[in-house]
Amino acid sequence: MSVPDNAPRLADLADHRSWAQRIPVAWWVAAVVLLLMPIVANSFWLFQVMGWTFILGMIGLSLMFLAGYGGMVSLLQMTVAGVAGYMVAILGQSGAHNVSLGLSWWVFLPAAFLIAAIFATVCGALAVRTDGIYTIMITLAIAAAFFYFTRQNYSIFNGYSGFNLVLPPKLFGVNWRDPIPFYYLSLACAALCYGAVAYIARSPFGLALQGVRDNPRRMAALGFNVIAHRVAAYALASVFASAGGILLVWQNAQIAPGTIGIASAIDVLVVAVVGGLRRPLGPFIGAFIYVLLQVFSTDILGFFGFSADRFKLIIGIGFLAIVLFSPDGVLALWDRWRVRAAARKAAETGGGA
Image 1 (cartoon, rainbow, N blue to C red):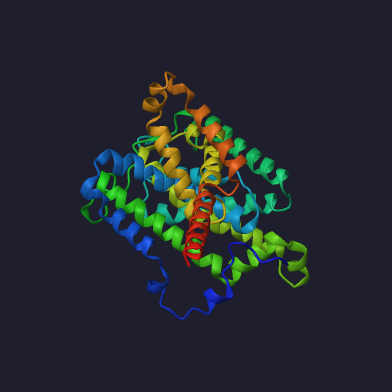
Image 2: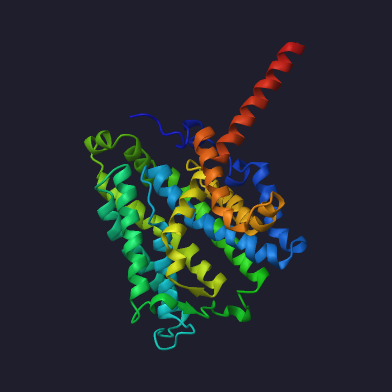
């Protein structure tokens, strides 16, 4: 069995430094910048740009977890996020008083995660019995079926109109939809999801999942239950997608079938692939690029004399360019630049000597 590219090395496992000492300085700088961003950034950047980036990053992270560590490319993650978001609207409070149940937050939040996890587990049990393009197609089919079901069902999902006025609970007297509280809420959730994926990747389950990705027959011969590991991966990934889905509903204060449409499912795939599927940071990088293009598409396209409706064209061209020149995403370009810079520096040092 080949060693996974993103598996921890023996030198890393034998490193006796504390967790704080093993974190690169650049990560501490990034953490300080993110924590202090509300001091310099306006509400638009905090709520719309960064908040949306963290949300899309978490949903993309669930795809990265499945594809990067499990070798399963799923187009179901936005649907899982939508299930959690719909449960918040249905079980909690919204403008659709005739449908929403109005339960307390400590009831509907755990229920939303649980129902989304059950949905992802059942769908995963179907999808893991396929491979490659067939996995993509079956998850896309489930996503399409759920989209049309929510659009046509009025007794539970309120049909085409969906739910509006879906607001976060005011815990501790804080309006969590205000720009600064929502920024810190989404940042905290994104950091927890990132840390969870990084930890799981080095856990026995994560290493076994990567082994299943690389050589399922060998892992089965060693006594590992390949199907169970893959289904469990879908269940774990649903937690990250659900967190992003709930925050997305609170950010928009609404959810409708269009939120979980086929285009949104493809957008999550684009975000994950553009950033990179090999590391948890990739989806957040891809989400930031996507959000910047989406938010400023009018200005960017207007500068070149195009209509803002051509936004998807730019996303498609960028996606094709990344896949063609850097299949591992933007992070791979950064790694290549670092390797070339180090080689150039070593050559200059050697030449000087």
